[in-house]
Image 1 (spheres, one colour):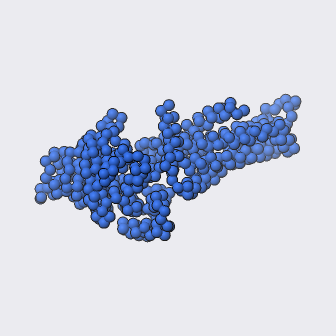
Image 2 (cartoon, rainbow over the protein chains, first blue to last red):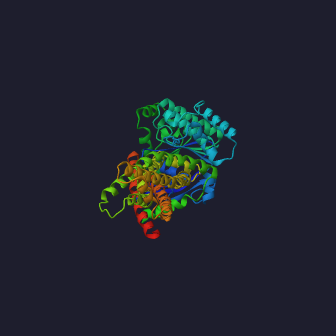
Image 3 (tube, rainbow over the protein chains, first blue to last red):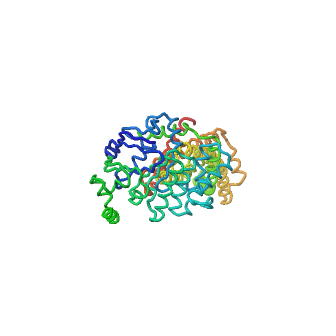
Length: 250
Length: 242
């Protein structure tokens, strides 16, 4: 479980996050949603320690991450897997080397065992026999799946996904969403997905946190979202025609 | 001053939370190839020509019959050792290697590859930058030795084949009043310049913010700052050691 308490962040006098709190449950796909530029990615970066918040704390299963010493921070970080928006694959390494990288750096596993684990993860994301391909030779959707394979290779307790559907066609998006959801259940991870894609919200949103202008305005699930009385959330959800049609039916 | 402070903190982070020695060894070897071996071609061209040009221009300026011809060899040797090999090649090195390091790290920053390393709990600065600095400090002195040799050979070929002096005169000039400290001085300078170019370029690239345009700016800034640092260090070292 990840707990966020009263997170605030400013950039050069501009308030990006204000007093955001929330709880993200283990074994569930937790979504942070909101329009572009509302502070979703900043919140996630505060949670993984890439950005230091001005105020507030983040707890990983009761362990304070924000105020942890360097050793504890490193220990917690090694329990985190993260899928970045663009995949963030290392350009100079092939698919296998990218997925194997955390094992090379953080474990003393024998080489055969590492390869076995890499192949298992690649198979899990549906990318068998792509081991020797370079990131420049694979599609955007494949890059995301390699990113997921790299994120789960260490068997993480916490899985972060930053806009996993950006730049993908609807079919591939749904496949990625379902993959994230299946992995969450299979490995019992605390998964947090930052997205503004309503398809993802309806598909995998078990616990949803809505951010608007740097503040948390609503928390609930995909069933409750269509019947919210939060005006800002309603504007966000019903921005597209399809969602308006879905609401009228429901 | 703020930037200088940030640079010093950045350098100190290279030595904290280090990874396994094996990781650095393979990374350093890879960087030696990229930084050193890939720079040989440009070093060969530049150093051969600066030696040749120095010999021809010195001969052109020796109009007094009282000055012996072997002075051409002596001047090529001393200018090469003291300035041309370590400093001029240093500027070329900053242009080639500095922009490459800043561009590579800048791209890694904007494509979140550096963030990915940090999230894994790896000290990204140490993992990415330390091997580059060590590789530069290993290979640059070797490049300077190569440059010095080729510059002197270039001077020999240009001086002798253009008929300004004989082989014997040139070789006599090379051996006349030789001060072995000049070799040490050139090597000390090469170590300092290699550290400055690699660390300043890495610092500039590592803290790139923005997109492709900013990566380009970082590369340019890395080269400019490295060149200025080389010239300032060149003057300070000359004052301190000569």
